Image: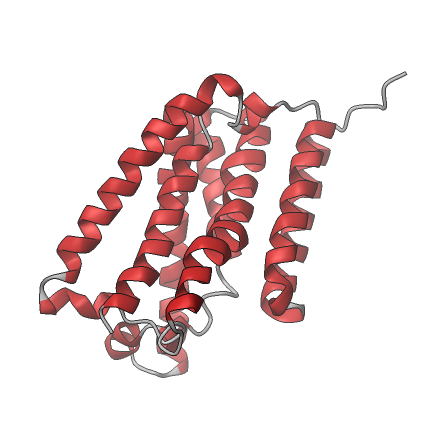
Length: 234
């Protein structure tokens, strides 16, 4: 006799609880274990979706959608690379790539960040969680638009703790908003709102392409190529 299926609403509650725990682990309790946290959390979230009767197709990783997802991925990475190249050439926009979190990193360390830390520690976890499992579960209860908005609101809130010192990490933000408590709060609120809007775009890509690969590719390109360009411009 198969085990009882987890109700969709119960799965949603469990997913949110797991994400809250993972966020605290990454930003408060065990930051050095972030890669392991990302892999384990992603596996747990996929397990919850499958326990609730989900499939690889519902997650956005079905065999029938992989080719289309790959085509979208190549196009999106190319677009981001072109935009970054155009932004890196004029002196007025080069400062956008300055980031104190990576200023002291050498070539191999940047390569690790681009090829391991970003795709595993950031993209795998966040896309599996917000455009994969959460979006799939919410689609059972709401329209695609509502599911995208709810998932994206949670995605924005997910970035509250990581953005607390963003005004110090990104010099251009510190110069714009100042290095005060109020300035730091404005930057954090802005980061939450920006990532929420970005989450809507990523959900649209997931829905439009039918594949989780598309938002994964865009997410990786924006983060990883940003680090790479910033390193090259030092």
